[in-house]
Image 1 (cartoon, one colour):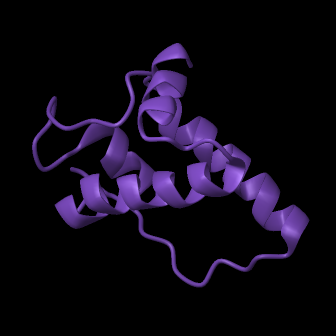
Image 2 (cartoon, rainbow, N blue to C red; image 1 turned 135 degrees about the vertical axis):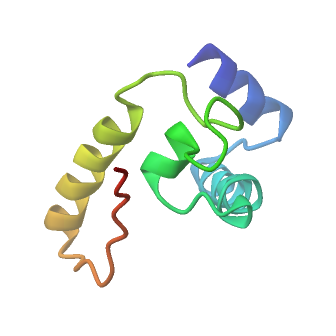
Length: 88
């Protein structure tokens, strides 16, 4: 958390609104535009394993998905498209 808060301070994300918008731009520019479109791809980067990974916690993608599921349900958001990664 210390590293994340240091990064946010450096980016001048000084309010929740700035942090949400800045974080969204960061994820889009660094991950979505690198074709890492799912939490799994952000964490594990199957196209180039071991490089350009978002988090070091091996359960990060599952933990974030659990939070998202909770808030989707709480806010009544319906999932319109789900990407699943399959590897043989």
